[in-house]
Amino acid sequence: MAAPKLARYQQKRDFEQTAEPSGDNARVTKSDRLRFVVQKHAATRLHFDLRLETDGVFKSWAVTKGPSLDPRDKRLAVEVEDHPLDYGDFEGTIPKGEYGGGTVEIWDRGYWAPEAGFEDVDKALAKGELKFVMEGERLHGGWVLVRLRDDEKSKRHNWLLIKHRDAAAVEGDGEALAAEDRSVASGRTMAKIAAGDGKGATPFMTASETANDAVWQTHVNPGSTAVASP
Ligand code: MN
Image 1 (cartoon, helix red, strand yellow):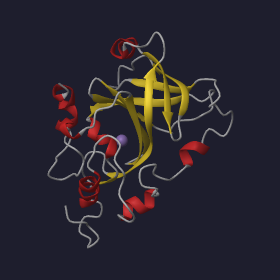
Image 2 (cartoon, rainbow, N blue to C red):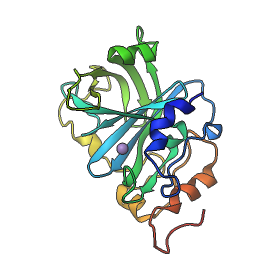
Image 3 (cartoon, protein in one colour):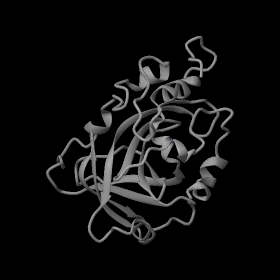
Image 4 (cartoon, rainbow, N blue to C red):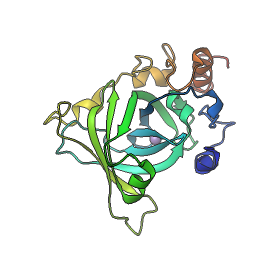
């Protein structure tokens, strides 16, 4: 049962106002492998939400500068509340004034697995170190998430996301990857998503392609005639 884990997620959102999923796992397709999604999110500050499927929810981190393929780059990853699995298909706009208001693009997605010695993911996260591999469209190979010592002033847990040295690592120009602005789910740029143009995201976590598109588009451009009917 994933529901109790999503209490914080649901508390922060008014589902009358936002088209984000309320966490209906019945819509989520079964998968033999664990899935991950990275959503580029132009909220108050641009960031990249890394979501790793674990135990029926997405463990989530807001990576402020986005992932880097350069193993010398240590990217701050702020732990945020668990998200429902159907959130991984969300691409569109969260209305201004709502929690996380801004445009969301599905920037990468695929499968992930803990490395040997980290198979008990909950335990690894509790201890503050998770080594894992990702196979997505943009992110490949080994990575590590390491928790920093908690800052007493902050309620958040801060982590670092670091690329392992392997065949998928690229030294230098750590900003290049995050600058890529095309949804892996719809081919749209952030600007197109914000404008409500182009086709909707193809599903990965759920089976309902048509409903997906309609739901995600509903609040894309509030007050404009471009808003699709639900
Ligand atoms: Mn976010």
